[in-house]
Structures are given as C-alpha cells and as structure tokens.
Length: 491
Ligand code: GLN
Image (cartoon, rainbow, N blue to C red):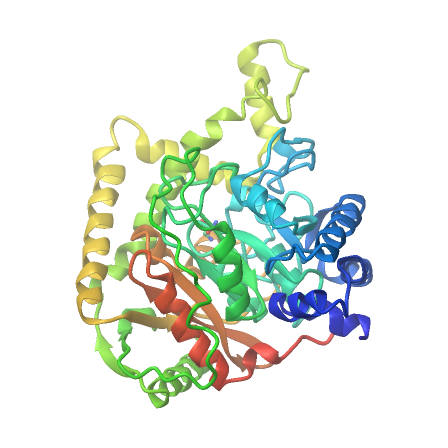
C-alpha cells in the first residue's frame, strides 16, 4: 500500500491489516513518521516527536501481534495533546512555564493506551494551558489547518486535530474544557468526542478548569471514536471526579450498515444558530438534520434553551476562576520554569510568572482572581454558579423529551491566522455552541457534516449524561449515509 494511503487509514482498517499480517506496526509507524517529516513545516501540529520511543513500541507491538495478542489499538500510532502527562516525555502545555518539564508518571489515559500496546508518536501543540480556540496562543508556534494553511486548525487541541486530518497520526487525544476537542475537530473535518464529565480519568491531565475539563478521542470516523472510548473510559481511583459506572461496549451497535434512526427523537435548539453564525453553516446544518430525519429520526425544530445566552458569560467567570487557582502552583519553586535572578522570593515568583506565562494565560488569571476576590465573589462567581445550575436544569428538562440535541459545532468555519488575536471576545465567541455542554457536564460529539468554501463544517450531537452510546449510534448512522468524513485535505 502507498505510504499516503497508509497514513490515512482508520484504526479499524489498520487493525484489520495488522491482524491479517498484511501490515506491521513498524511499517505503519515509519510511514507516519515520514509523513510527519514531510508535512510538519506546513502544519506545525507537533511539539515533540518521539521517534525512537515510537519505533521501539512498534517493534514490541509486532512481537505481541505475532503471538496473537492483538486488541483494537495494538500497534496503532497515536499523538497525545501536550497537556496530558507522559512519563519520560516532556509535557509542555505549549507554555514556557513547562517547556522542560518531564513528568515522572503517565496520565491514566496514557497508561491505558500503553497497556493496549499503542504506539506513541509524540505530543501535539495547543493553546497555552488549553486556553484558546485557535492554537495561536501556543508559546512556541501556531498550528495550521491542513485544509488551508493560512487558516487556524481551531483550538485548543488544534495540533491533535490538524495532525489527524493531515495524516500524521491514525488518531489523537485531546482535552475539552469549553469546546477544545469539538471546535478544532469541526474545523479540521475529523470526529471529536467530549465524554460526560467523570467518564474518563483526568489523572495526569494538567488542570485548567477542574469542573469542566475532560479528555477525549479525535479520530477519522465514528467507529474509531468508539474504539478509543472503549479503552480510555472508566473509573480511576486516582481521579476523585471519575465515576464508577460500567463502561459499555461503545462499538456494539456500530456494525450494521444503513442503520435506521427510527424511534430516535432529536431536538434542534434555536439558540445554537446565533446571529453571528455564517449563513452557509446554517444551510449545511439544516441539510444534515434533514438527513437524520430521512434516516428515520423524529426531529423537533422548535426547541428553545433560553439560558444558553448566558453560557458564555458563565464560562468566562468560572473557567478563569478555576484556572487562577490551578495555576497558582507555577511559582518557580515546585517545578517548571524558575527565574533565579531576583532579589527576593516575591520578586522571583513575580518574574517567574511574568516570563513563564503568555498573555492569554495572564488575562485568565486576572479575570479569575478578580471574580474570586472578597468584594466580588457573590456578584460574579456565586452568581455564575447559580446560572450554571439553571443551564444544567434546562438541559435535563430537554432530555426528558429528546434522545439528543443537534447543533452546529461552531458559528463559523476555520478563520484566518491572526484574524481574532487582537480581539479576545471574538475568539471567545467561537465556542458559543460548545461551552454550554461543559457547563452542564454532558457528552457531545462533533462529526463532519459538510463543506463551506472547501472548509469542513462540524455537526454537534449532544447527549444525556453517560449516554455516549446514543451519540455514537446517531453519529454512525449519519456517517454511513454521507461521505464527508472520506474527504482528505490536499497538502
Ligand atoms: N476556547 C475555550 C477557552 O479558551 C475552551 C478551551 C478548552 O476547551 N480547553 O477557554
């Protein structure tokens, strides 16, 4: 098989070839490393490439396979967002603060991948500490969108989605606090799932906003997404927010072609088609939802979730507040960057944080400490928490009637590099459709649902807590009936 075909395989396709001994993990890994080599100067998706580790893991995987020890992720190369700790491999969060930080332990998700003999190709670029929507807030370099390299791949998991789309890895892991898996997945034409809060362990995920953060898969199709979920989901005694629910087999319903959605009731909340939305996106989404209807789903186009309009404000109180507390640990003493050239401890801390953090991170810390300060706590933080409850209740009511809600993933397609860097509010607005879902702790998936000016459009499907199965089923039926996910960017 030609190398560029190898690089665009799905997990399940590669697994089949590995199982039939038509392909070795080493061949696949070498093809991807070569591809990374070829396209990285255009895409800049990776912060660290662990070639030696990957080749060694691939050899080991091949040994396991030769003994008949093979599971769906065995020998399949993956890239990991650089906010997820990898033992012995530096984990930077795309920040100067952690530029040379080498964790002494693996995140639980990484441990789980390694237990399946996955092959880790390296770590992907992101907005610093996962704060942003374009990957331009990386302290190192911006990543580029494979569909148009003058555009952003989205963020903050933009490195992971760009790499998956550009054929640099078979799949990737991302993290999502307000949309950072789904929004860049939409921008890059790949599948991205934010699991229910508590579904996937966050042990070893560098904390941004602890009541919102979740790790999830970024893949080329829905089946792959289910396969990765089968491995990474589940309780972890090292993460007290993880939930001891049984992990279902997420692939169980995904084998029948031409599946009907008869009996599935879908709601379309009108607030998710905001005024700032590009007209063509609305058109693409209407066509996609019509498709769901043709597949047998009952669609209610008249759903209203009025508290959605407060979600952005609530998020930008709560997320920075939590971030300001989580980032207090970077004081130049415990680990990470440390400015030694100072006359006092206070000055050393100040200089460490002044140099170690970028502008967006500082902005969040200031917003957060302000919202939490004695005089303003009730007016901002507490009020935001109350509105959060209302948003959550509104979703609960909707889910008494609907199996899932469907919205666009973003109000626009991928924007130009630099376009929103001077205007933080415009940048924040690119997550209006995804933030409310984190606020309510719900699962949501973004799947390719069309193109506008040759740029991918994402459809977001939102589900009940711990009902990732229904999301994947709907997404799979849609995917089987369309071919958007088969298009690849020309690089
Ligand atoms: N773009 C949002 C933010 O900047 C969400 C980021 C994320 O999900 N990590 O906070």
